[in-house]
Image (cartoon, rainbow, N blue to C red; front, side):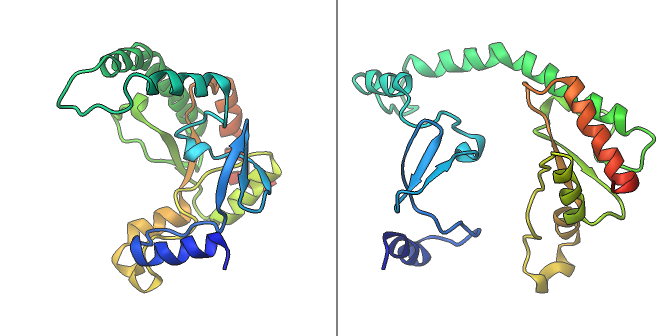
Amino acid sequence: MTKLDQIRAAESKLLLQTYERNPILFVGGQGVHIVDENGTKYLDLLSGIGVNALGYGHPAILGAIERQSRKLVHISNLYFHEGQAELALRVLGRWDKIREQIARLADTYLEVFRDTAVETFLPPGCDHGGLMRFPVALPGKDQERVLQLGRKRGLYLKVIWDRPLPAESEYSRFPNAVWTARNLVLLPLYRALSAESAAQLARNVVEIERNEA
């Protein structure tokens, strides 16, 4: 039995199986690569699902961790320390610009999709700057076909779930969740994404909806 098999067997008894996981046991990494228990090297394009896009073993990060570990590693919120307010101020200092960019991208998508069959789901008065993704649906188009056509155009479109979350026997009780999983496509809202690139992405989506070319 491999180390992965041992961990999977233990977790099946100890943890809730809330979602499926890929049968890979990662043990280390360097730079932009991550290594499994067999020594196979992968290019890490997930970065903890976008949470910590820091790579592995970078000297600057290792140095920062070492310096901080010589002072404080964890302090309860029952007490004060230097880092919390400083981090909050740094985030707030960037937040307005981030929100402005996200709202600009959302407005760009809305403008391109205006008077097309592409469905958007932003109600009037919605705070565009607070969005994480821009949801759309292409009526009458099979989602897998939409993703396939997107890949042909160099577009790797995201969906919420690969399949509906409820068990198939429960589909009738959760029609909205089933419809969302089968139809919704999520467009990116990144600060680094330009309005011109967002407009081009949206035009490609419109072309997929219109003719599947």
